[in-house]
Image 1 (cartoon, helix red, strand yellow):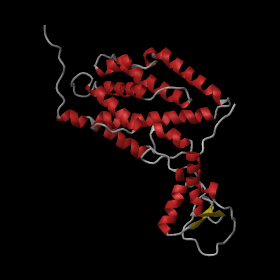
Image 2 (cartoon, helix red, strand yellow):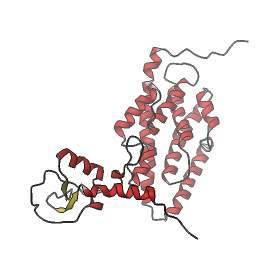
Image 3 (tube, rainbow, N blue to C red):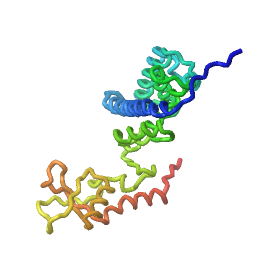
Image 4 (cartoon, helix red, strand yellow):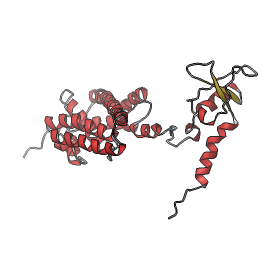
Length: 284
């Protein structure tokens, strides 16, 4: 009995060509992330109550299931076939197109769903699709690289050389990952340490003292816009060695809306301390 041909061992050429699934995986990650929040914005404009959005997302999943039934569910069996080189071309294309569409659109609708397993399926299908024109290596080699690339791009988790290239492309073209964009849309902007910065939770117009007037007593060295976060305001004050700044309209710098001082930047920290030491209790 002969042992099956496991293909050639990946060499320097394969290492260089790992950029192919890396960069395409990064582009797919960007596209899928953009589609999630395009769908969220689209659902927000629908003339129906938000409680119907997940139902519409479920309808999208159902339509996708009619087109490619194996795109439904957790998909561990599909991931196994993709990573072991046993997936058919129809399955690869079906998962790549249908799973990407229904995952992005349904997640944007607010339908409960995961991120990790669907991204595994999408990434592995991308690598498996590209294996047809890349050098033959061990079964599932390119599918594994595609999986790493899409996970690295979507979740900003560069673990391999392939995912580093996808991560780099994602960082250059996207402000945030699919995981942190939703938090940022709730006006809780995150630092790189993934902790909420109190100064990023408030905007200048929320804490400023309204003082519309044509001229200030002394010429201002720095101006603040009402839609800037307190973190941006603090940076401006620090860079210019001042403790206060006028707030002006972004479109009309001559329109003075108020003034913001160093003391008002403490508002965010006071709110943060209040939430740490006081817990609202609901009594029957």
